Image 1 (tube, rainbow over the protein chains, first blue to last red):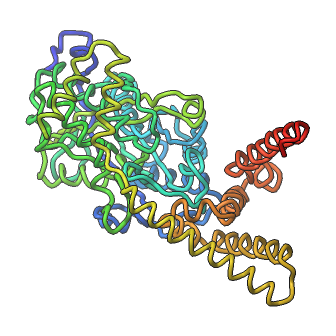
Image 2: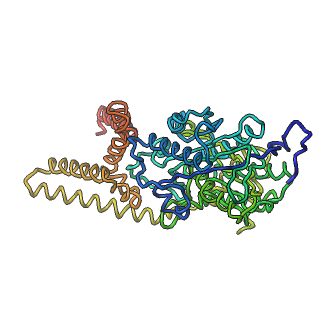
Image 3: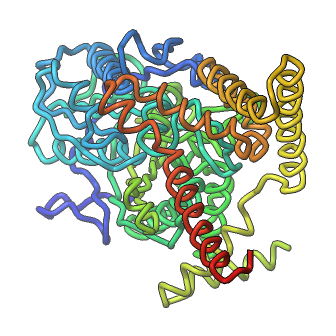
Length: 349
Length: 167
């Protein structure tokens, strides 16, 4: 990992990357999950699993807000802080006008930036949060994102009781919320400190896929582009990382990603991991191509990946959730599905 | 086989023209995306659709047995099938049947009933007018519109042919 020249006022590296002079610490994280996620392979790792998809609320949207509120509070609590210690809150979700986020975080009274990155939102939030801290603009930042199966189906697809068949390439939106607290200082707890060393910000990449039931194929080129640029910018080989983790390419998208990168002589077949493949068991849970949604990468990262780093099983990971930036309107109007992938370098030391 | 796939992928990655690259990528994706077996789907659709229609015929026979004339029996059958579809939709069973049956559940009138009942359930939370009222025909809308429209076209054709003494 190249060291950034500290005499240089700019921290830009290569074309799209940053190496931080003061890499932020991850001092707290949370994962709140729904029933199906709780029944999946990672179910035992989440902080809280809710059986009731409404969380006692009246609507799916309010339920998602409640998921997010709980994730935010839990992460702050686990960091040993209170709400007013947090300087900025960065949050986003899949719903129009980000209503899950706005209503979810309103009562926390933290200065708020709403973000839209579709399923890449956790990568985007961690990226911008890290920039704020390394730049001296904040001491504590909270990054949080959520998704809800029922809310997403309503927003993007069909009513829940409608009788239609899903193709094998379709994915299952994860219900839940994940939050991360970033700090300019290490926490007092034992174990290795986990820091965000740098980021590579994605460009919008569009290879002309129009099939909203095959999002893995739509997003794979964006993940390929970000990984390739990241490795070039930082002059690294893929085996520098214990794991290169995408958000929700799923089974179809993951295979495509490995094929595309191979053309650039980049081999990630041994250390690539996809949150969409990890979070559900396709055989018993009938989730076809895998999990998707902002929470897919978020709760896999906070519940599983951070645990691996804390326990010393992994030392360095590249976390790059991908997002598909279409809407129902853009799809109906015959447009393709542009995608983006935001990469974050997370290391334990 | 792998060698062929690799040639395809390099056509994507090395292609400078964006339009051609995207076309190549779409072709490649089609190759690598698993699909349901068309044969199995057709079989399942015929089985389920056939059962639903046989059930319909049973109802027609039963209503005739109860004393209805043929036309009324058909109407009663339609009402019965629609009712059963709405009932099964509201308790979440119809969706499970449709996952297996596909077109077999979609094509009979039960599919139409499900497509109206499902949004009615979903949009209850947005109120009677702007929720249910506005959204209830969100899936069935095209069926209603183009069904009526094509009837009108056929009616026009029939009228013209009648004028020329063809029918």
